[in-house]
Length: 312
Ligand code: TXA
Ligand code: MG
Image: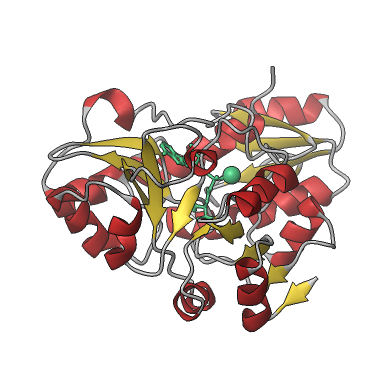
């Protein structure tokens, strides 16, 4: 069910959940100060209570409503990247609900860039908790249709068109003079380092760790396989029927049906989930993904497709 901005604000203030557009993916939003509303997010998504939520705020001056410490480093990063796809994990104020932060001593905050959601937060004087608006472990939604396919037609959706960034925000935890990468996104560690002059601490650049980052995540329903080279992918395609491949470099071709995403990582990210949703809805029985180059610009996409393809 599609609803307008005013109706979205009314429902959020009444303690209901509403799917809202952000520049990354659609979020399933609820008033971050209302514990009953927060519980509805977990119930609707069938998400484990151990997986904390991101609070979306209207602007950086709201950080101190939620965080007990807002270091100079965090302020520099907020100024450089907000509104935008960067989430800062900071020490939480005591009042922040344990449901929201899953008993962590910290809270995750971000100022989203989508104009309608900016208006919703400002006009409604709201802060909303919002995980991606899909059932737990399924493919993330970048259109209202994806939200309805995953959560059902009954869910209220504020239509903001297709998401422009296309994959979830970069998450970092920030202390006084250090920061750690918790989840890859299109804002790279190198871009963060360039702004603040501080490199990410320890090995998190390679292996980010955030609670609830389940290995089987962002997954199509159809069996999905990841390949490092086109020869191995083609060999698989030749020995299996009904394959559809996803490539990131137009210079290569698969011997089965395939979709080629742009060789530019930002453009590929914008189209990634839509393409996976389409492949999942097609007749294909095996989805084959050729891993893009292992370079910094592609790390967020590689992270998502590795999770999409994970099979135990
Ligand atoms: O782009 C995004 O970040 C989207 C849009 C809707 O804003 N949201 C999103 O939310 O991807 P979700 O719930 O699917 O992923 C949020 C992740 C959690 O899985 C958890 O790992 C991390 O954020 N997180 C939240 N609070 C945290 C905390 N206090 N400490 C560490 N990690 C936290
Ligand atoms: Mg998610």
